[in-house]
Length: 451
Image 1 (tube, rainbow, N blue to C red):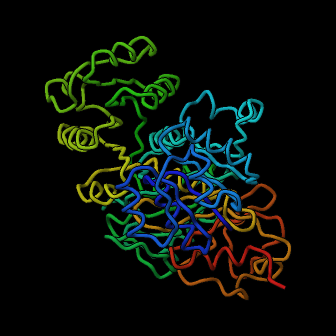
Image 2 (cartoon, one colour):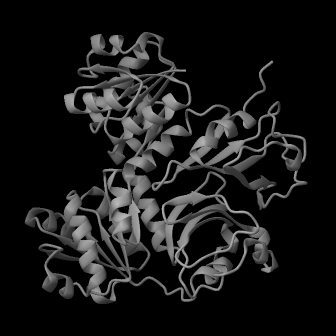
Image 3 (cartoon, one colour):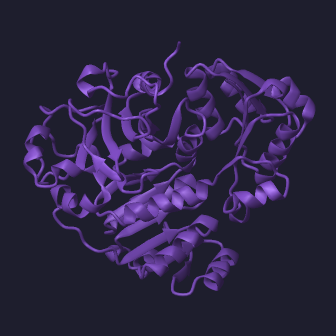
């Protein structure tokens, strides 16, 4: 497939890296010379330097023969213009990153107004939902939902006193709800592995679990002895995302305090938020944090535009007694560094955005793609095509790629944990976890057979 990516920031770079690895013909348009140099040095893709709103530049990038355009610059307006121009060049599919909720909330409006955008991805909406899911799942360090809403992917750091510590995965089959969850991956130190029945769970493992929504309350005590209700959240930084998050937390009857150094922004927050306590000052001010009752906060969420302040304020909040800290970082390279500092949860909206875009590109019918922030592993929700290799035979007779695991089959709206005798039928959706070297092989199992 010929794909033109407009914007070589973190989203564009990671998309170009992943899609070129999958064999697509990639062109990238970027006006920032430093980003042009970086992507030219690191990736084997065609790069055009210039403004994406210029038809000449787009033509140089191969827009006339493109099957797909991904407009992922930091500007909503430029992304919209690119989609309009792409439509005029006859490009079949246009995907845009749009932050403004007035546009991203209603795709029909974009068509009616002549913007010709086929899929909109809003990083802020995805980020807010991720934070709400983490806050709503005691002990979780990672959350993702699938199109089949009754199946959840949740990540947990296993405490030393957790009931499952020291047990082999095969021993967990004795648990009453074991047919409603499956541990599909374990991150131990820096390594992500797919476990077997003989794998023993160790203290401080990060485990990733596929679990039926209804079974989640029964699974949580296995990794988290105490599941306290969230009563207080402190947010650092006033922006569109933090204000929306505060409103949603207010609706859930959670006590919210928001800290912001800028006077004008604090006044804005006080105007739009009904029940939130708004404090002006630095989140690095110990006295201000104490005034915010940081010592009894269930979560401290650092959402400012200042990366360093987010990291330092979160570390300080943890030292002063906050139970868990969530740090937002726009630079994917910061994720492993922040994790190494012992932070509870790190969220990178740009990597989440990449996963949301990939689901519209992958071969076969891909319902959703979840990218893991600490590795290039993925969880994919796929539809089994009628003529694909995966259907109409027991799984034990299928050569499943090393480094992958079929975690769940959705049958009649219900999650089923597969066994060797399980048969996947055409039209059923399945969820597969795959390490980087297995992703393309997994996709081939679910696509059409070559004649």
